Image 1 (cartoon, helix red, strand yellow):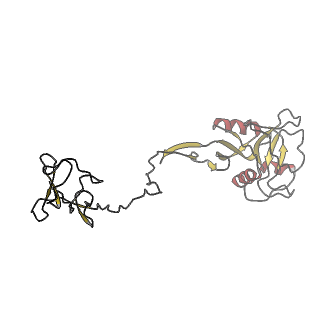
Image 2 (cartoon, rainbow, N blue to C red):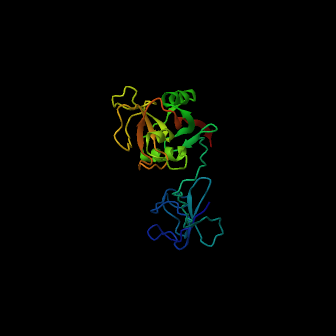
Image 3 (cartoon, rainbow, N blue to C red):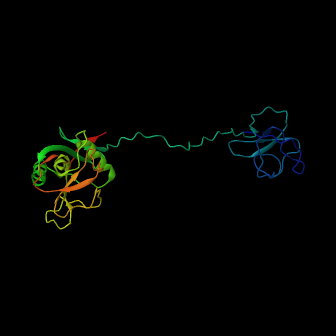
Length: 251
């Protein structure tokens, strides 16, 4: 392996320059050992230096002497494109199995989504017997807790014609589950729900322990309001309510 140094002495010796260089053995230039001339000094007859690969010693030679040579060039660094990670995470399909509850009623009953209950109109019994029939069917006489529920029950149970306002017409109204069996004015719903809504047409009579809903128009002007009646009076209709049937489905 060889290197060339175009110089005649140490003081004027320098490494060649340009885009391509002869290999630099050491820098700054310091002589270590030579095979000719004094130790540490080049031979004045040679203006170039060669390196013997077997012993790493330097020799001054004529620059016209053909030798192997080693070149050095400036290394280049290819520009790299930095790929940034996307800010949006990949969309992973949602495979979660979720349960959906669907409520409905058995045949003949009407589902009302506001209360999540089922309703059915029956006919031809007094107050006590009506409640017993509702219990046999898994429920109670209907309880009402809002104007929306009151209108719903009225429309469900109405006969579709106008009644009179005397005592004989009272049996055509609809029994609901608000009762006062002790006749002391302490009404309660037979299903045990709170007495938190009322829609009396007039003050309830203390001698009458059952409540009816004026589901149809009447000449007394109590449409969709409540009145009291005697327990033994058989009424045209009564409404039972019970829990809906929950069906659990998986999507």
